[in-house]
Length: 225
Ligand code: CTP
Ligand code: CA
Image (cartoon, rainbow, N blue to C red; front, side, top):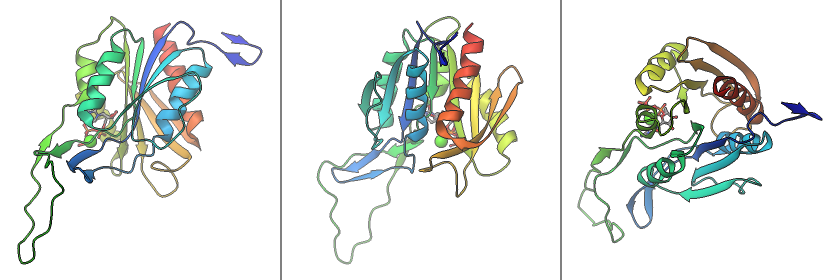
């Protein structure tokens, strides 16, 4: 639906987007984190709202202003992101997991600041696996026909790793980007290939994160129709 240059093809739809990167606390002052800025997820939320969707953005530690007209749920850890995402997807038409979710968290949270002791080596940090939120949402669709989209940043064998990951996660679309100097983490630019479980492959040239977001919503809207 295009009216006066505005696309409202997501009107009446509820979409959920996760963004940012989780932080897994070790003690009150330290965490394990990653370099995700949240810009791609925020661009997805803003463009979906502009196309008429009701948008829930589950944001993990992104230092960005809340996009206008979007319900933002702020979380920090992977377990908190999982809880907020599972709640939000219950009535969602589409889910896009753009957040960088930590694969591991410290096995133990130390309630007081860990202190160094002269002459004593630091204890190794034991880690445990976090749940795979994307795989879980894909496996237990809260609604028939709910569309699930994942993201993957790869450094090598981008397409082969992407295809394998798409199959492993069980999602409908996987946005695969090659992380490099000028694109990906922290940058305003991104370049990607969107792989479909139906065998489709959509290349998106280097450009603003909003442009990639619009391609993702084009593919989602076509599959929801
Ligand atoms: N993801 C998730 N829960 C996790 C880890 C990842 O929901 N515990 C989601 C991410 O939000 C992303 C997708 O899964 O949409 C792919 O993340 P990625 O880290 O590339 O995949 P992994 O399966 O963790 O594989 P790898 O070992 O390459 O990190
Ligand atoms: Ca991972």
